[in-house]
Image 1 (cartoon, rainbow, N blue to C red):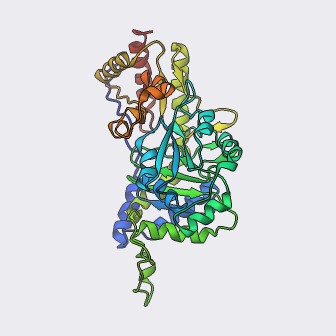
Image 2: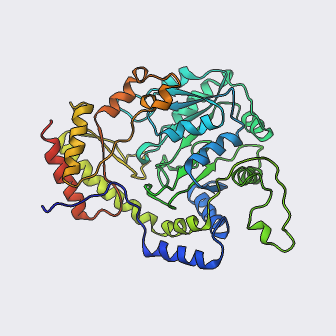
Image 3: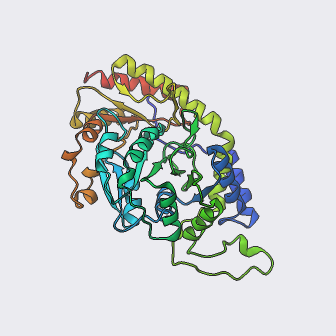
Length: 409
């Protein structure tokens, strides 16, 4: 088989997206405007939520979720040790203390028993991560937070945050859905399961706006969704009481600054890409499923562990294909990655646990306290999985992965 160069995760951009961006540029409206509002409505409808807010990243979305809920200094937020830094960093940006929890053995999910043990009177939120596009067990998390309601002390550094915490009366459940846009579990879509969910539309994600993200939330008794939406707008645009679109109305030039806040809005150029991605997304998800089926057959034949993306209770977005080669260590894993790269197959590792990173080690975290997270990471290789792969590309990845891995098992 002739050598190919298989990129790990290039964006899938068609002429539809390109033409929509051109039309946006020609419209004279390139910042937050009508296309952003249209994309927000499509996301809310898709996720079965009352509202969605588009922002410039999933990290900004998660951070604003915390700020909306009044979570900040003196509060604790429980986060899996096995995730990307954004999951933890968003809470740290708000002044909260992150408390890491180990994974279940041989799993990307948090150990829910350890989550329960980590809850204290200072705990205000738990962030689960839908790694690879597979939705975490939020039913289990809700059981955990309900069982610990007696420890929950409503707080909140804003009036809205205090009302949200009091209305829920328990630790809040957040979803880092950076990977899971379009996934479902037990008939419910990502975005309508956790109390608050953030999505990523970064260039490497299934659904992209180049950069960008969004947040959704479940209806909360006694809390007005329009008030929530307006507060997100204030936080994302300097605390300015009117966005640029609202200021275009006749005589509507004047605005107020109600808080010295942040700048993380999405632009209409980004939204233009997303609007056309929506038209193509069902077919894109279908293709990912087809590729995963072929990879599953290969891994099962080799005896290589892989995630279960499609089950009786869950449909993955098929964002990442994680493999774990039995009997190897980190050193051998690195050899395999290099050999595959020499054959033109570019792979990756998702993820190096956060307690191994310099920033988090300096906070006092030690990977020795998270043996399951390290064990999962130590023999992990992520294969290319994207909708630019041809059938021949997939066959090439399979052939070369099979040949290289057989040298070590």
